[in-house]
Length: 80
Image 1 (cartoon, rainbow, N blue to C red):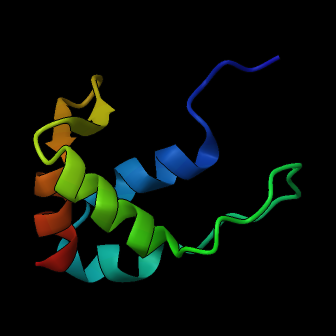
Image 2: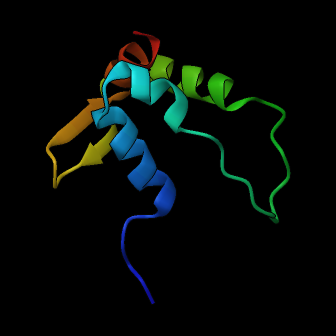
């Protein structure tokens, strides 16, 4: 059994570390079956609510490469 970083998060890390031109096309989407019902909100809506609730809380931490972003910092990086 592998206990490594899931593929999506490795891809996210690579994207965050990449120049902007490469980052804009690197992340696609992840899909799978779930036992949970849909909440009726987009990921963007859920994320915006979390930014408003806790802007200074860590959202992404990649300790091996020293990347650490709060919700607010991640929002700024995505929108830049």
